[in-house]
Amino acid sequence: MAALEEGDTLVITTLDRLGRSTQNMLAFAEALRGRGAGLRVLNLGGGDVDTATPMGSMVFTVMAALAQMELEIKRERITDSVAKRRAAGKDLGGRRQTFTDSQIRNALRLIDGGEPATQVARDLGMSRATLYRRIRELPVLSR
Image (cartoon, rainbow, N blue to C red; front, side, top):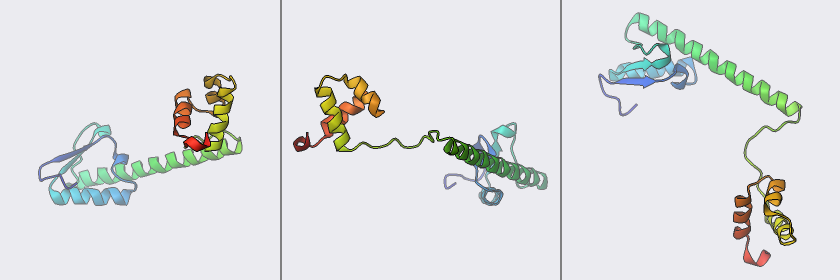
């Protein structure tokens, strides 16, 4: 916003990327108008939405409300999907678990005992390269 000057046009792909709520988008449009900058929304056919005119302002307000509704529907779908996956005991994704030094030492013992490093890493749910890196990072005294 600070880089915009009078006569510039801000180009965005979709209106829902502009803000989280209709109020937020209308406030942003007002700030643009105050700077004398225009707005072009590509998924609206690439035309300029001139919020300085009554018709442009009305179109922008309606589209902002629709974008907010679309965002709320997406959130609802995601919440429902997570609840269903949780109820079914399925993986929700997210950050991978971290492994303790003890687990890495046990993996090293298995490798030293003749188990293939690839299989040990697969059983832990990590790549062989990650397993080797974690082994190198172990404190020397605890190996």
